[in-house]
Image 1 (spheres, rainbow, N blue to C red):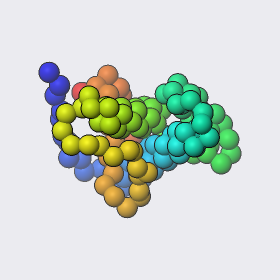
Image 2 (image 1 turned 45 degrees about the vertical axis):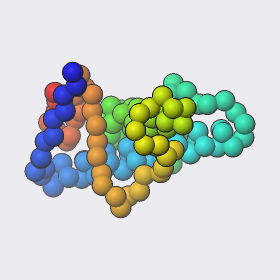
Image 3 (image 1 turned 120 degrees about the vertical axis):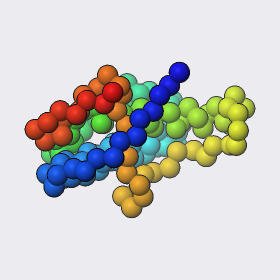
Length: 136
């Protein structure tokens, strides 16, 4: 049985900045992974694995253009890649007929202007500023 908990938080201004940074980084990682998979498909290359995308994120953190990805918890970045993987799994299951319900469209790029969300695995602990927030 899977349980889901929804929390409403009232962050301090400093925590709001940290959350905004995390939302932005998760969006960028998701969009980069989606773009990489779309380009690989267009070039006729094999499907990029999650491990390959994770290596690309790690390499991107070391570049001057994307060094700011290192400012947020790696849990947030890895979860963005996991969300992309779930979106692709649902799409492929839908077009092959293994998924019940309506057909699912391929994953789309995330926008800055739509709702923002972060997911964390139950065993993960994420740091927001000076306080650790355990998601359980």
